[in-house]
Length: 382
Image (cartoon, rainbow, N blue to C red; front, side, top):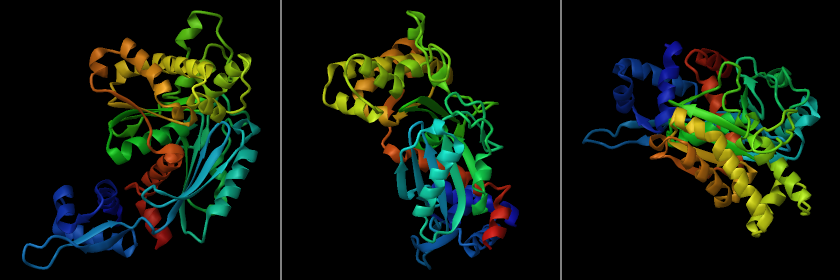
């Protein structure tokens, strides 16, 4: 029986509150089988009765829902120049979080040490069930490590999952843009979506047919280090990854800081660029709109090939709103196939800075509650 309780638990994660009858109708299982599996899940504390449903004259039917407070998930969304660590419930909602400024190129020991400290400060006697770590580079998902990252000096094949052995729980390592894509797609049931992270660096995550598209080497969606269209019209600019002409060298937050500084405007961080745009600084507005065009050029072919229903931008530069979006839309609608853009929406994320940790919690929960792994979880918590 336990081998298959994950299938029933998945229904509650997808649909929310359900009665016994609804579980039977959706799953196609017999009443006795559903009763057995609900009893097993309730005994483990994974679901909880939430009160009576509608009555047709007899006793009101019981309704159940995922017991999202049964344990917690620790997540850390690591970016190029900072990280957000969070404690999340089993449904993926952040309960508490902490922001830390640290440069990813300082190396894994330095950055993961900050993650450790943040987790220790955030845990308040919680029962930790799993950990999710997001990083700005290609990830070998099954092994839990970064592979040949363009900007993450010293991280190549570092055992990130092993760093957290002291917790004695499963550890998931995921590309940061992928985690944001899941956070955008899952709650709204968007099956075909491109999520673009636009901050210090540039990345994108792909969710199609409800699944993350990682590629065979974990590099799917890494548009930040593809060649920018602008690079073909002049001497290509150098990128932090060591190559020239990358999208990030023209549209990344660090590149905008560079260009504003060269134009005589003193800025230090991406947040300063956003502030200038909001103040209407002419040069900052021009550069951010141009960055949007570069991003639009970079994603236009993906739109034609994959036909997403939406493109969602998150990260610090996304706070520039329509100034950035107008450039993205201009190029996407110019260069992508008309049929692929007919119902396409291009917007800024509404999840704010917690998009990454939310997506990581959802992905970690997916691994914990997978039908082929739930036996292990039930034994551990039982």
